[in-house]
Image (cartoon, rainbow, N blue to C red):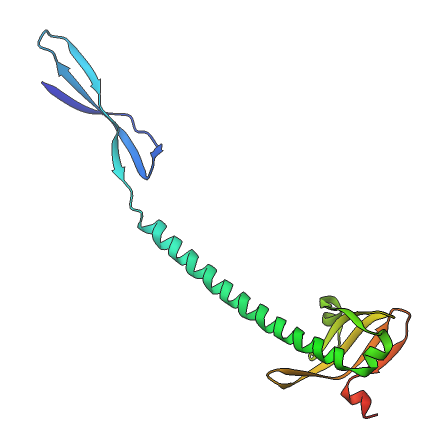
Length: 168
């Protein structure tokens, strides 16, 4: 004779399966003695579908954000390369600082600049260094023009630069 009854519930998990409880079988050995035998835990299989859907959504969001960041980085990098070329081509800047050894985009000074088209670059040359705040205009897909701006050297001198300064 076999009698089954549920004995307790556990809240632990084994892999992706939850343990619901144990079943206890009581066997009569024929001599009037009953031997309790505890079987393996009864397991209910949980669905993995929510985890799969969540993983797919997370992957798609990461790919979208990565694509947006890549496009933004590429656009800023392209603009900066064109601005660097315009800065290196300006004779007033080269006369003031000498051969340019480094140009770095200055986020803080760009944010403080009064116009929307004005960008700031820290320029380091052989003779001097300074901060250029200038208005860049897109001439074509491959060319930016430094129309006007001020190069403030570290010694305090301010030099007007750009194509608008040349016509004055």
